[in-house]
Image (cartoon, rainbow, N blue to C red; front, side, top):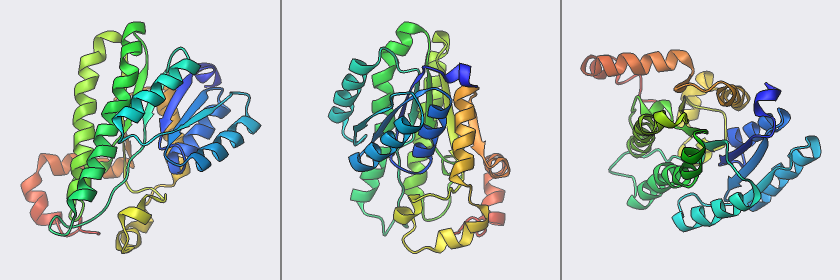
Length: 264
């Protein structure tokens, strides 16, 4: 595994905490050079220092709000001044707010789309030209099981993740002649700070606590995906089967399990 990643430049958005930070540490331990992007410069500086103290990889970081398209262009221009090629882009930045449609604010909905969807597209557009030129590269978009199976009280968030999956699947076909790998990661609920914002009532976390994935396990799986690219990484497997069955028999599922899915 170390041979595969040694010397690779891996850009990770949302790298200041959660699975983004853990993946940065894991790829660095395997000889890759993480390039950390997130809004919180203090947290990025701390993680970058930790990586560089533990591993001889020269990790770097840049403060970035992926919803700001101009800032995305500026930051990636700076990255390309430091490295000649980005081998892997991990579009991990994202957030959710769980609200009923009639209670959700347009400000929150717009912000989710700007970060979760437009941020993914903007960062992808910055790495594609060089990947196309070199006939190489790997783009990984972190979507969600919510992008396959919508649930009550997450309509806007689910819509953003459906959009990420649609973008990912179309992009995969577009770049297939150029040997660029495109992967989607679809996790269920993960034990991270995500729910501090998404689930202010605490009800969802309480209701699904026993099903939550550990951030360490997800980071391990995503690191393996970087080493062995494939179309999709679905976590946990049983939840993905639920999504498949729901999409095959949506009408029946609405009647039989609609209540079961209402955990928020």
